[in-house]
Length: 455
Image (tube, one colour):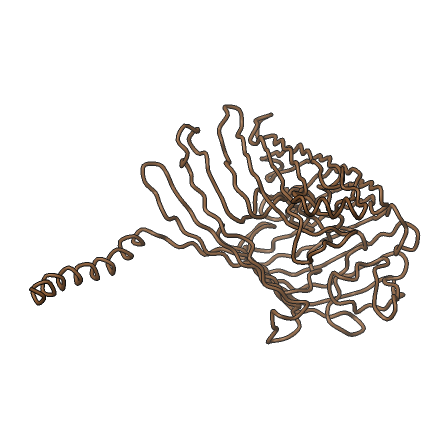
């Protein structure tokens, strides 16, 4: 009897083992992996000696990029369509970012200037929710969420990326509705938490009405973001006991009106107006639109910007351009007025070779003069680049370029703070600082590659 049971079990066991080998092959038979990403890297030097200096005005949230990037940076993504049946699809995407100081062959990502970061890991389900209009997409995970930026200076003026969940592209007849809840955790700047491993959970609710037709080739986008620091009772009790007033600073909102015009001299133009209050305004950086984690921050900010790409001579000469004005008024005097303008004309000698010139200007009027020579400061940056690209167009990549960059600013570049460089006219953290403390101009030169692919 025992032998009989063993005899009958062996074919069953063999069948199960065979099925387990076949099932993964069947499950993955229709999966098409997608490899996508972005990268830049190069080499540069500063006239007078030292590696490439990157010129950025102290207090400015961005700098003009051409011939003015001092790091190796890459985003490598993998994704796949996992399901496609009866009009419903599920897709997966992931992205890892790397940055090194671009100074050596073997650069450990454990060094202070180097880093590795998980930027995206999410799934989308298109037409997954029954009852919603065709094309509606359910998503969850960590992702770049509908980011709006200006390419010339890498300024992300509307960015609530992070872990989240949402439903996007809901057709409402006139335009589309997008709803999202995202999170960007931080820590209080003015007071330390009782447990340094605890962090404030900064939740943001993002509501957008997009693709609203306005005129031939034009569309409008309206958005409201509300952010708040979500604290457990023990954190609130701690701040109450230590006298921290977080009544307004732990929350804030931002409104955005944006118009995009296509078929604009062969390209497109975007105009945006934004207003934000209190805790949703970041103290520095360029990711305004997410809660900052500064519990006592109160104030407001408004911003207007225009950017675009046009063809001045079809297939021969095109132009990237931008203009930005931002007024940030904070009760702790940490605000500023920032004006920025730049142009990048590119002339195409043939389908591969082009010559680019970028002129950028930034003017900073700090709310407080601390660290900025008690007054306004400004920087002008000019770059000439010879380029070899995979076609014509300012946004065509890959590109290999040789460049020379000259920058001039008012006042001393840096000031000495007990033996280390502190921002004065120039930002001390934008890359190597190989101009002297009291220099008022600088020249760099080098080569760079830039590439993006996929989606």
